[in-house]
Image (cartoon, rainbow over all chains, first blue to last red; front, side, top):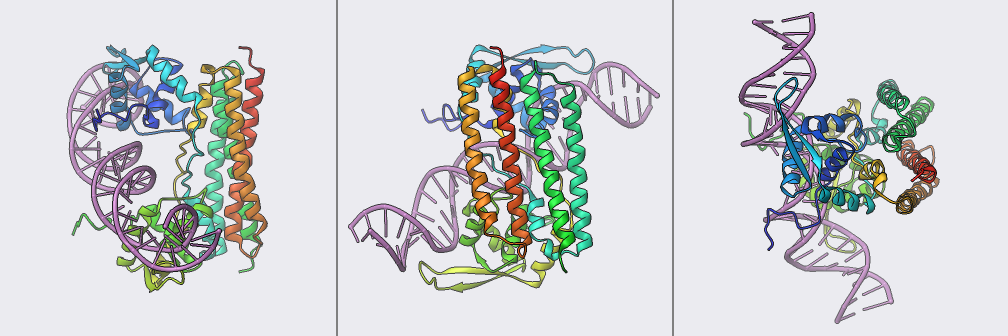
Amino acid sequence: MGNLKETKAGKEKPLKHVLLAGIHSQPRSGYELTKWMQVAGQHCWSVEHSSVYPALRELEADGFIQSERLPGTRGPERSIYSMTVAGREKLTAWVAKGSPRPAIKDEQILRVLCFDLLSRETALQQIREVRADHQAQLEFFLARQATLGEHQPGPLLVTRRGVLAEQAYIAWCDEVEEMVTRRSA
Amino acid sequence: MGNLKETKAGKEKPLKHVLLAGIHSQPRSGYELTKWMQVAGQHCWSVEHSSVYPALRELEADGFIQSERLPGTRGPERSIYSMTVAGREKLTAWVAKGSPRPAIKDEQILRVLCFDLLSRETALQQIREVRADHQAQLEFFLARQATLGEHQPGPLLVTRRGVLAEQAYIAWCDEVEEMVTRRSA
DNA sequence: CTGTGCATGTAACATGTTACATGATTCA
DNA sequence: TGAATCATGTAACATGTTACATGCACAG
């Protein structure tokens, strides 16, 4: 008991639950899960592939998922992972419980805090670039939303979160631009 | 050349810039900076004190800040850090440049994706708790906003970001609740 | 026959958290 | 006198990224 290698019985790292969530709707390979996180999980949780493959092997060792080796139709062979009963139970327990408000790490907000260090022109240019970036992201989410119906409530709500979040960010950029424009210096 | 201990000339870790931003408006101690991040920087960047003190010593070693040792009026003595000219230049350069869209890590969105695993009652209860949590956070930001005027555009805009972000999150929670309520199962 | 996408994997590094550790001062 | 707040610090651990590495298959 107390094996340091074993996660302390119950506390799994978030990534493992994210991967279970990705496998939940359909069996997927590590490569597909990575892609899935980059699109569907874009504003939820996304990691590089180098973290995905080890995590999948741990999940399989723990009996939460099982793999099937397929000779790739095109490309090399790949491992397709699917849920086990234990995995579904694990995921259900995780979905049911709560989690603390997510920590936010956004350097741009800090930049705005220090806008007094910049000329008005430089500040305006920057906030307009940031706005354009989020506008593009908003359009991505809107396009995705258009492909989803109410018969897929999960993906639709995830996409709605993206839409609402980006709209709020854009509205903030507009407030920043207005205040910078009005400033005396 | 190529000293592994030295950061590769130019690429500082984000925390260092955050600390510079915190010192920018007024000299502060490590303890005060930690508190400042927990309130003003709540939705920007916040770390534990154990990361703060080493980072401050690095910043001082690089000549971006300077410390003054004060015998604490109450409590033990503390180091108050203030900006140097080099530090102000460093911060200005950082504020002027852009950064990629911040990565988002929010487990709750993934939970909603998997709400089909929960009973309607459990799902509704959870999303209402999440909503209440963000409502409380919104009220915190609104209270803070009320103490700020347009003569402090930086802190005001940072707080506005908090307000807009929480309002958007709450609106999303309402959409989730509505869709869960309407679902057939 | 070369680039692009598919597909997996490892090692070194970056950056943070948790827990442990210390000690003064103030207030009840 | 004992808890709460001020104030700083270290060590072990967690969790991710970047860069390196490999190799197939298809399209142009």
